[in-house]
Structures are given as C-alpha cells and as structure tokens.
Amino acid sequence: MAMRDRDNTVNMVSKRRVPQIESLKHIDPRDYELLRKFTSEQGKILPARLTGASPQQQRSVARAIRRARVMGLLR
Image (cartoon, rainbow, N blue to C red; front, side):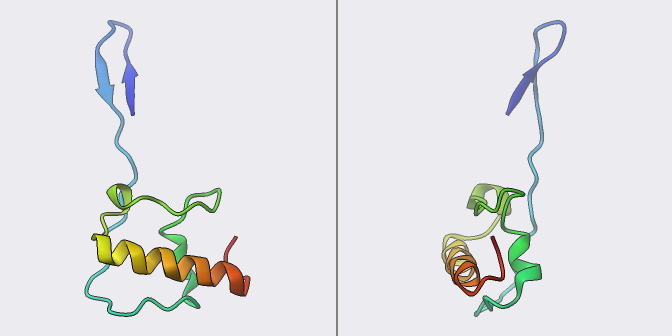
C-alpha cells in the first residue's frame, strides 16, 4: 500500500507479517489462539503473502479456520 508525502514521493507502508509456522504437520482447528493470528479483525483469512506461510501451510490454516468457524470458535 503506497502513500504519498507532501512532496509527492511514494512511501511504502509496511504490512503486518505473521511469522511462518514452524514445522507444524497438523494445525488443530480447536487452537483458536493460533488461528486468530491468521485472520483479520473482520474475521477474514489473511493471504499467504501477509502471513508468510507456504502454500501447503496456507491451505491447512484455511481449512482449520473454516472448521473452527463451523464449530463456533471463530467468526
């Protein structure tokens, strides 16, 4: 996301980046504390470019978040 200064130069605004999941083979849908790190304040799943997760990790996180929503643990 770029913002402009008074002199019309572009400054890049840093985005929140959550550290990568270290070698977790199974992400438990009941671990809502971990899953909240991968959701926005509105409850949307954050993209991998913001979370730093690999594609396989991102799929498993997204699946766990969807299951946690069905169980009523997350919004």
